[in-house]
Length: 387
Image (tube, rainbow, N blue to C red; front, side):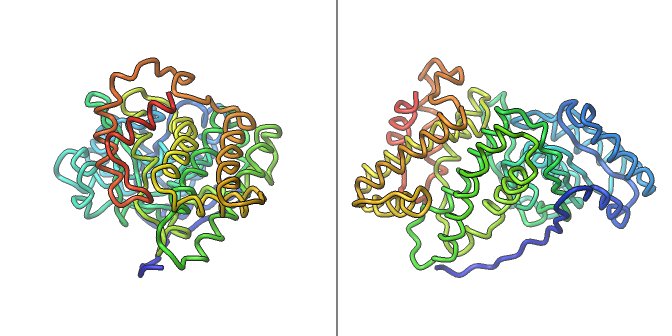
């Protein structure tokens, strides 16, 4: 286990009715930028509830609506302009990871003199941000409790992640009831997303980090148990609560600090989303089993790690080679058969491979130092196998 500093400054209010804690925003100023996506928060009544609490607390609200599923830099720029022209004191995101990611870069852009895209491609330029708050409505990305944000510039077919400690939310409300209306598609994609976060942290060449490994296995078992329950019973509080809390811990540093290597599946999927605007969680699900098989073939020493995954998460038994192979099969069956996620790139509308080369070249730059380093040629092979 390598040295690390662990700090999660986000205050979490978890459970039913915790949105009442939005009154705490009054301690950070008078003007809030409310950021959200489509009309779902208005149809559900969440918008009205939040607005009443904010207004009763004496807060003036400016709105940034229409955040995209893969948030665009143009939307971020609109938010930054609102912050500067309206003298905004804080940013409140109500939605899923895309809304929160957009809010983070808006909050940082409000404290930056240049273009917000600078902060996406060069995180070192993020030196300050307005206070960020969130009300989570979709369990997936873990953005409610981490420093990361992913923003797209579709005019350039680019999707990049950025991060800064000052973009960690100050406070987040996690009420599982707000995820009851999440569609089956997004429930499945969200489960795949949080599983991928866990895999990226779990499969590591770092030795001696048993605490992180066992925690990751527990998170994966939780996701595998409750993902199907949430699909079958969308209003199961137990299922939604466990998925919500598991998704948060998959990426807040709990299982990565001291252990994780650089990520590799996410850089590949970011290219798929940048070029084809597919659902992030679905792209991750499609790539993951193919990646597992590829890295075991490229580096046979990893077979033991996948066998441990099979034994400790899927309760498999046998020799390493057989268990590792079956573990991948279990993963594939869970994602595609149980959770009904599209099983290949064609199924999500990618009907050509002409961009695979440039996509692979970009992704390879983000795979330096990962569990099994991948070249451009490796990634092209993975894309083709997922095709």
